[in-house]
Length: 175
Image (cartoon, rainbow, N blue to C red; front, side):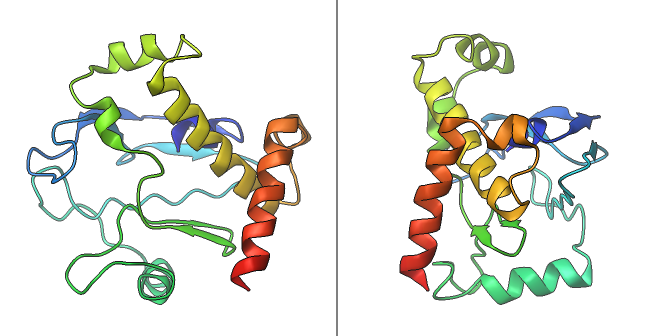
């Protein structure tokens, strides 16, 4: 998500952290926190809410509008979450696309430090690169569709245009 959003704006104050040691999938995985970070963009409004820290302690409460969006979509047919097991992470892109899970298996990052992940990103054939960049491309395509294909420096690429075609076709099937 950070890579995708960085194509549309700028982050400051991102901090490295690890996922919870009690996560059922890929515990203690190198990641980032959006707490106390800022994001600026002329195209995208990004409102991160981290409800719990890695120890399960409450961190942030969503605003009423964000909570309403979440409760509306965190149920069938949009989400496979169950009572007491919310669909997290949750991402709403312009009210057009919602995501209730990671877009790739985080186990691919397990055991890697932030430095190792960064080094892998320099290798175009690395499974880490393929997962992270592939995910960023799909998120970018959804953002472009929701944002009238702005900026063209991101949205006009053939990769993003191809993803937009796939997303549009999937949306038509789900209608």
